[in-house]
Amino acid sequence: MPWRLEAWSPEYDLPERVEGEGVEGVTVQTEIEGDWVAHAPPRVAPEGWPVFYLVDGRQRVEAQLVDAAGRKALLATVIAGAVCRDEKGIYPVGEPRKRHILLHKDEVEPLPPGLSHYQPVRVRETDPASLRARVTEEMRRLEAAVVNELEGGYVVVDGQLYPGEEGFRRSDRLMGYAKTQAATYLSPEHQALLHRLEPYQRTPIFWVPGRAFNRLVDVYSWYVRLPLEPRVPFHGAAALLRVESPTREPAEAKALADLSVSLFCTMASTPWRDPRAPQNLVPVFGLEQWLGRHLGPLEVARRRIVQALFT
Image (cartoon, rainbow, N blue to C red; front, side, top):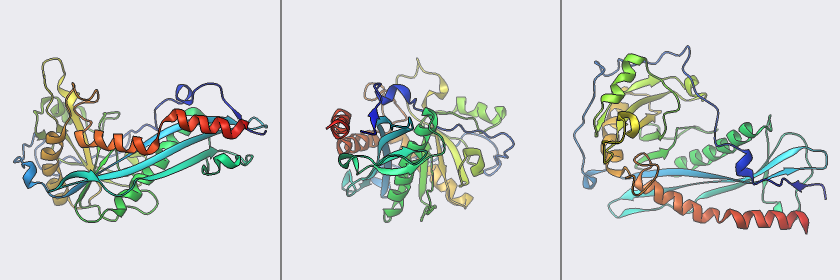
């Protein structure tokens, strides 16, 4: 039998991190809306919201393999789907997209018949961080495909926007958001405003070239301060959300920024309900659960892998 299973569960050897971002040598334009002051756009009640979709993806590393020559490979599954929010409520849109992948660097032995649904994906490096980054990249490609399948309405992606091979068909009604602030894109003077924002306020929009994100899309971006109760134990930046859009028009970006304040602040979660509050939006939590049901239990997937390799 050419393939053998690593003894450790793959989660322990594959840290959850992707390639970092930075803005060294990159010009970020901040003067688009005039003075750098907080904006408090008029609030829009849910009954006045436009139709919009929420898109998210999940990834799961299921096994690490080593062939007879000692070459490593990785089995993983990525999935992406969407829910729609309209006058009828919030509900899933069709079936999610799911892909099983075999990440490998060199030519490897074919998988046994029970694992033939894992599609080969060549990678340049097989260190844990690079493999995890590639799994995330494959998930983002699925998310982009889901975005391009949606008809009408606005689209909100949980995570930063990566256009995939085909790009986005509609950029003027598309937003993505980062729940954690892993990088700084503003000067210290502009960054100081983030700590002074009140709930339902946002920063002015600013433009960031794609090379600052290690991707091929320029975006307009802004920060939104979400409500977080109780406020006393938390510092001012604990409830920030960085939002972005690939639209090419400043006026469209400003309109999206104003709309995003009502959408995100109303859908923000609470600490007693979600440990990632307030940034993990309530409908996205439900979307994650729905995608998880389509993924199925990890224990079942791993048992099938073991049976295919050793029977």
